[in-house]
Image (tube, rainbow, N blue to C red; front, side, top):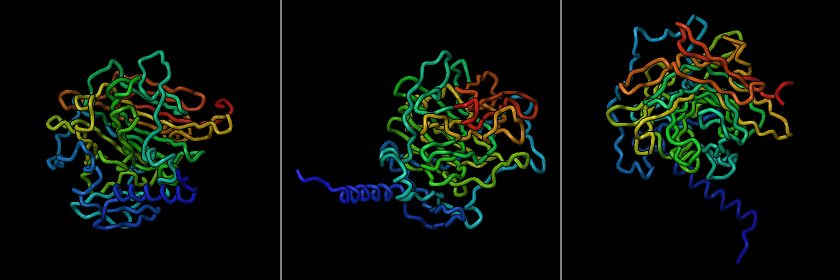
Amino acid sequence: MIGVSASNYTTLRLARIQRHLERINKPAARTIQSPDGDIIDCVPRHKQPALDHPLLSHHKIQRVAPQRPKFKGERPPRNYSTSDAARRAWQAWHHVGHCPRGTVPIRRSSVDDVLRAKSLFHFGKKQMRVPLARKVDAPDVVSGNGHEHAIAYTVNNQEVYGAKTTMNVWDPSVQEENEFSLSQIWILSGSFDGADLNSIEAGWQVSPELYGDSRPRLFTYWTSDAYRATGCYNLLCAGFIQTNNRIAIGAAISPVSSPGSSQYDITILVWKDPKLGNWWMSFGDSMLVGYWPAELFTHLSDRATMVEWGGEVVNMRPNGEHTSTQMGSGRFAGSGFGKASYFRNLEVVDADNSLVSAQAIATLAENTKCYDIRSFSNADWGTSFYFGGPGNNPQCR
């Protein structure tokens, strides 16, 4: 058998990477060079990567807007706002251009992006998690592989058809390239200790390995087999169908919150279209971004059984100590408004396609000396919580 030299192996690997990039970097009608270094391709909607999925070979893009859930009750929770607080965060590439109608903005992936991943298979995927034994009926995110969390989640295994929240955006420090820090919603169904977990996720994250920098970025994720083989971040594989020409998933969010100063936040709503069964995502007050087709899922083709909101980091302990990767703002929950990271107006979508304030929730943080969470409720913010932490400190080793 003829051996393959290191140089030949590298050539073969690069050829495989190039073929993969040709599949996900579709030909663009317009290309925009963002001031933060990203390249945004405006790809014709009907040629986006999602439609390469074998389950979507006959899928027709949903063109009629789904029925948006409305708040059920006397009045919805009031959004906190002043001239300087709770402003809406946006995206950096908007300063230099826009994508024309009929196209969707897609952040272009590069060879360097793939080379930072463990392998081509792992590019764009979360590390598979190993659930830990737990005393409560806690969510799948209670896991090993260095993953740590500070989250709120629904209890009683209730039927859920979506969730909504507003979270402020920060730029937490991430110590190691293969670590990350994020704030997100999880929409879950299936077993937490098997291979059939379905998950839809959306929020913001800092991930040097995935993006090559430390900017906070809007992201999505999905899986139908507990992160084993299906799904990916953003549009890095076939699946999520984008319909919006103004929001680039995976692009940097700007501006971001700063301690004791302006707080910039994003509102995300994910819900199941009661007519066609697709799971839609809305960004901001009313901007539809796109949807996860029902065909992608098993359990979520029906409904969700749990929603989670909160933060997650990866702590790789490179020197046997906890890293200084921050969660949220890098400050503990007790720091309060203007310093701690928050989720406000936690809401779920019920069987009537109505939004209701999330009442029956529990909170969880694996290591409160590193990251913690404090929930509360009031008239302005409804059900809410502060969370986060600095990672390594005298009490967190």
